[in-house]
Length: 140
Image 1: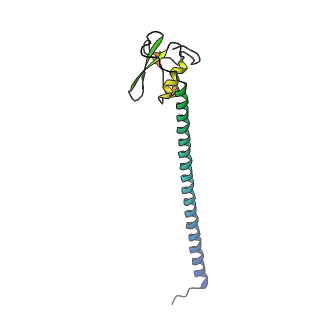
Image 2: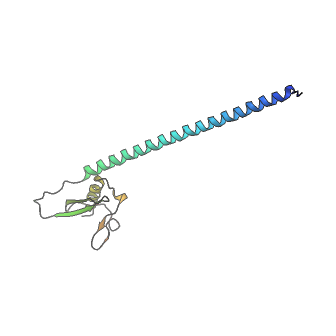
Image 3: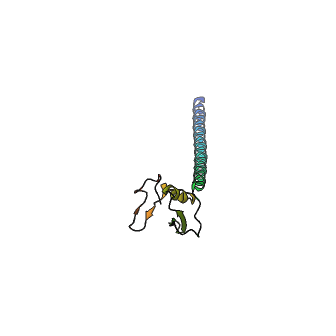
């Protein structure tokens, strides 16, 4: 006959209670980690949305700063520029010879391509226009 004293069952109950509390704490920690990850994801999405809105506001501001395109009938004092966009599209735009490089940069920005995200190249001889000039008051 096997006789178990009261101390053994007390130890067993205490061990079970400790294991339960440990599992409960681990579950709480996992839940807190999930909540923190979800909060971080929401923060990142809000930051991306804010950045998109800021870029759209900058694009609109650049579009309003672009001078009017000269009339097709105007033959003198006009410069035609061909913009080759990253998606392969080409945009032909006419500028007055008195327009500055800033107007050119604003036009590119109004298309959604700020100068900080691309290059302005002269075809022949091939070189970067941005590295040659400051965009302040330089003629096209």
